[in-house]
Length: 178
Image (spheres, rainbow, N blue to C red):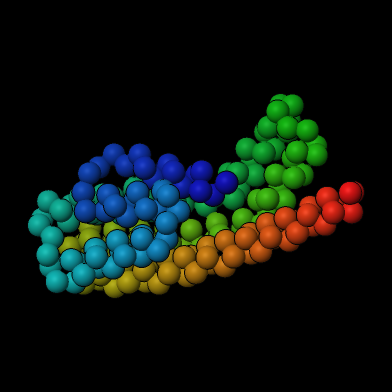
C-alpha cells in the first residue's frame, strides 16, 4: 500500500541532483536512498554543486518533501475511505479492513512525515543559501532513512517467517488429508 503511493515520487517535474533519490524512494528502496542522501550531503558539505544544481536540488527537495507529506497524510486517507463507504464503493466489512490496515501503517506514515520535514528543512536552508545547514538537515534525513530501511528489513523478515509458518501449516493439512 505504502509502496504503491511512494511510486508518485517517480513523477518529479524538475530534473536534477535528487533524481536518483526520488527513484529509490519511489521503489521503497531505503538502503539505496540512504546512499543517495549521503552522496548529496557530501556534495553540499564540500560545495560540489553548481548554482544551477543547487537551485534544482532546492526545488526537488521541496517536491519530494511535499509528496512524502501527501503520502503520509492519514487524515486525508481516512477521509477517502469514509467517502468510498458513503458512496457505496466499500462495504462496511471492506471499510473496517481498510481502516485496520491504515492503523497498522500509521507508524510508517509518521516516519515518512518526519522524513518529509527533514527534507523540507534542507530545502529551506538551500533557499537561504546555507549549504552547510542543508548538509546537516540531509544528515538528519539520512538517519531517518536508515531507521526506515532497518524497519523495512524487520518487516520483510516477519513476512518471510509468516509465509514459512503458512507453508508448514498447509503442508501439515495436506499430510493429514491423505
